[in-house]
Image (cartoon, rainbow, N blue to C red; front, side, top):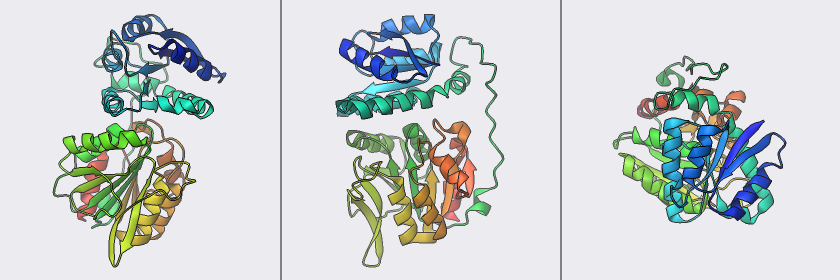
Amino acid sequence: MIRVLVVDDSTFMRHALVSMLEQDPEIKVVDTARDGQDALDKVSRLDIDVITLDVEMPRLDGLETLKQIMKTNPLPVLMVSSLTESGAVSTLKALEYGAQDFIPKTQSNDRDAFGEDLRRKVKAIARRKSIIRLKYHHHAAPQPAPAHAAPRQTPPVCSAASACKGPRDLVVIGVSTGGPPVVQKILSALPASLPACVLIAQHMPATFTGPFAKRLDSVSQLSVTEAVDGDKLKNGHAYVCPGGKHIGVRLRGSLPEVSVTEEPKDALYKPTVNVLMETAGMIMGRRVLGVMLTGMGSDGVDGARVLREKGGCLIAQNEASCVVYGMPKAVVDANLANLVLDADEIASAIITTVKG
């Protein structure tokens, strides 16, 4: 049974979240809190597995509440955010401070879809409880570690140079749940002189991708912008796909360029990683390095297959460092990954492979 604390200053929203969560027999809402202070009091007293946390609240807002939780009693936290630009900025900060994922409130217009997504995300991040306890243990007040929690082991990997021969001048990154902090970690470790262009398909609402690109640009030596259809592939530059659209590569004459399109309109995810990996593989073949990061589901595995068939190379994030080991697992299980690496090792593997 997953025990949840629901934190929101709106009585209506608290009731709605409780009723949607408890449609799943594996989830029990043990209590609700009307603001951050109320939440901290309850976190200290109750046995909780997951917290859903509103971003904007009186007395103590979501960010300050989250900081306190991660310091004193670290737990998996799902941010429930507004779709405004300020809501996006706050949510991206929350992911840096330790929140595992977020769900935007306007999705609640379609109650069934929102409820399904909410339950799926709560169940996915609940599995991270023991890992979060271990990760934040040195910050937190002493907590007995769960008996089944083993120290994280990174499996040995062969060197990037032998597994993925370079040079390669295009890096394509597919990512979903838990992605923003990992993408930030990787991009901030890449040099301005990187002899490659980077394209990123992150599952994210349209109002979030602009602030996400700005955030990445502020912490990275690369230039990072939200992609526009027809952008040139420039070394030392990274493009984030706008939410609600797809990013890929196409030819203009004999030169490849960035494609931003609404097709396929029926794709389950917008952006879909399949379009990015498939078009990159078809157009640029051996010049592509694909990177599959944390995410729910299997989006990208079909595109990754094309990328590998055309001579592209693929790095998958390992299970221990993923918030959700779904998308990378799909490519590993399909024997498409040249390398399986911890999040901390991916930037140096990109640099080695790109330079060849």
